[in-house]
Length: 224
Image 1 (cartoon, rainbow, N blue to C red):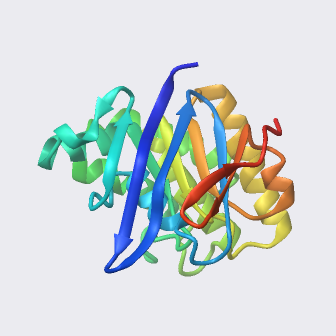
Image 2 (image 1 turned 180 degrees about the horizontal axis):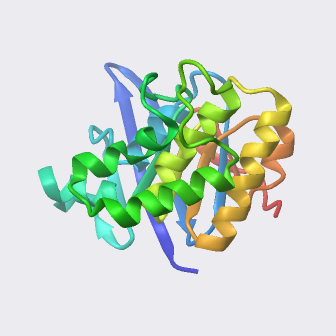
Image 3 (image 1 turned 180 degrees about the vertical axis):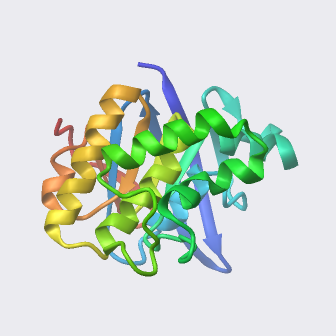
C-alpha cells in the first residue's frame, strides 16, 4: 500500500513550549487512521500540519509523493484543493445558502466546470440524506449540517479527508450515521481518512489508532 501522506520528524513549538516532538506518521491509500489523545495534546496542530494549513514546523511532509516544502503560493493551494478535503468541528456553512450551494461554494471560487461538480454534489447530498434546497439556518439539524460539511469536503474528490473531531457536537446516533456513510464512501471511492476522534465505537473502525502523548504518536494497534 503506497502512502498518500508521509510525515517524518515533525516538530512544532509555540514560543518555548514544544507541542509535537519529532513524530512520524504514514497514511496509506484508503486507510482510516484515527488520532486520539487528551485535550491540548496537539491533535488539531498535527492535523493542520498534515493539511498544509500550518507550515511553521520542522521535519518533512509529502502528500501523494510530493514534498510540500518545495511548494508555495498557487502550487500549494492547488495541491490542497486537488488532494485534500477538510471537515472541522464547526461546520463553517453559510446559513442562508442552501445545502447544495454550500457544497458548491469551493468549486465556484476555484473556477472549475460547475456542471459535473453540481451532479456530484447532488448525488452526495442525496446519499447523505440531506435535502439539497434546505438551509442551515432554518431546516437542518446539527447532524445534517455536519453531513453537508462532509459532502462539501468530498465533492472535490480528495485523496485524503482530514477531520478534526467532526462529531464533537453530535449525539451518538448522528455520529454513527456520519461514520457509516464515511466508511461506505471511503471503501467505494478509495480516499484515506485521518480523523481526530475519541469515541470507542469509532476507534474500533480504524485501521490504525494513534494516541498522541507528550508530543509523540503511540500506536494503539490495528482494529479493522
